[in-house]
Structures are given as structure tokens and as C-alpha cells.
Image (cartoon, rainbow, N blue to C red; front, side):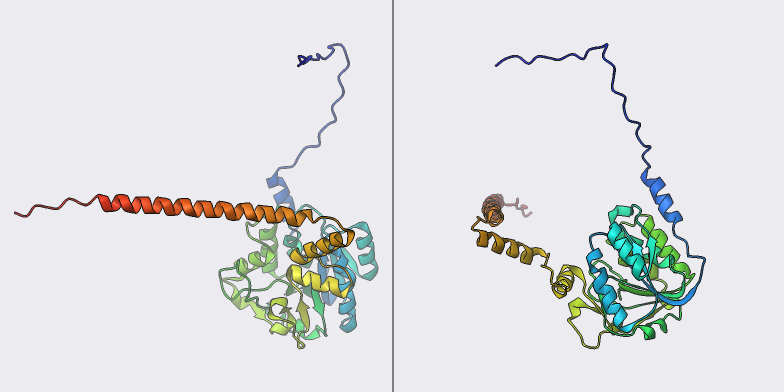
Length: 320
């Protein structure tokens, strides 16, 4: 094998000028800047309104959401831009008002920006409605529940919140200038080590139950409870709910097994080998073999330890 030739740089050749690096902001500086955004909109220009928001991942739901909303309601709508594409922002500007919240978010989860979207609205009473909610009726009676300042529904299926009953944050009605929404926003922007904005809201409201009003469940009927004809707002939560919406729009599902099943069918039509399935079967086989060997070794150690314990008997005290 030929020896490697070490190349030396010519000391007289001009060095390439390094590009000036932009000063990187620390996490504390970003956190402080985000917390400074948590302020109420000082301009109050309407009585009732609705706000929703999304990023580029879920912007395909926007026409579906607005189509169901416009069938039964005519309140002004604000769209929170959590990182949409330029085409989606332009579409939202045609159908309502746009609030720019496309800054970097704690833990890169845009649902922590939900309280900021509410704070940006100029209405006396504002309702946040998630984008995966199907609005099937008139939401005018819901504004009547915004008496104490905040109105929500309950979520009996949330396993991440230990304090019961659990408050749902998919549909939240608030009165302008309520201080608890500011606390919700500050805690979300401070990088709370929880799953999402719903858990933060429950932490704040745990000792302040007297300041909220619980609406009937038909104003946010959860997918896990099954479809209901009396639901005014049907919340299609999770990946299964997104697939239901995609089915209404004529789009293919994206969730788990059904997605891999569709890929498998496509490959079978083309006569290709399903390498994904083969790889998975091989991995599962290795795992099962490893688990069987580990169980056998543990059983052998237990039997050996029991034999040793039986051989060694405790000393008997001599009777006087």
C-alpha cells in the first residue's frame, strides 16, 4: 500500500476570507424576547370574533375549516400564522385577518403560541377554535358563557394531566384583558417542560376553578367519544381525526399502519418487493429471539440462586 502523501499548504497563498458569523442568540435571550410578546392587543374594535391558526404542516385544513364555519356563522375570523407558506398567508388575507406569529417557538412546538393568537385579537369576546374542529352549527350561544372571563369544555381522556377534571384547550373563549391569559402565554413562552398548551392551562387553572365556566360537551365533542348528531363543534383529534378530514377532502390517509398498507399495495401493483415489511419482520424476529434467550438466562440464574440458598442453612443456636 502506497504511503499517504501529506499535503502542506502554501504559506504564501492568500487565505480565503471567512464569512462573518451572525451573533447567535442564547436560549435565555430568545425566551425573554418571546415573553415580551405576551401583551393584549390595546385596540378593541369588535364585540365577538373567532381565531384559529396553524403552520405549513396543517395549512391544508384551512379551506375545510372555513367552509364549515361559513355555513352557520358570520363573525370575523383571525388567522394566526405559525409558519404557513406564502400561498396560505395570501389565502388567509383574502378570507380574514392574519396575525404574524412565525417566530421560533419553545421546543419547536407551535401549539404553545395559542395564547398569543388570542391576545392578538381586538374583540371583547374571543373564541379560539382548533383547525381540526368541524363547526356544525351556530356558535352564538357559546359567547354567552364568557361571563367570568374564560370558558372551556372538559377532556376526560387526557392521561398527561394528573389534576382532575381536565380542561380542554381546543375551544377556549375569553374576555379581553383577562389576566390569566397573560399568565398562560408567559408560561408557554418560558419553555414549560410539559406536553403542550393544554397541560400549561391546567396547571394555571388548577387553583382558579372559580374564574372559569364549563360549557356543555356538545360545544367541543371529542373524536374519542364517537360521532354525535348533537355536536355543535366536532373535534377530530389526533392522527385518526386528521385522516377523517383527509377522507372528506378526497386525500389519502397519512396515519401509521394504513399509510404503510397503502405503500405496500402500491408496491404489490408495481411488482416490487416490500423491503419495509421484510426489514420489519427481520427486526421483530431478532427481538423475539433475544427476549427468549434473556428469559432463559434469567430462569437459569434464579434456579442456581435457589439451589445455593437451600444448601446454606442458618446456624442453629445451642440450647442451654
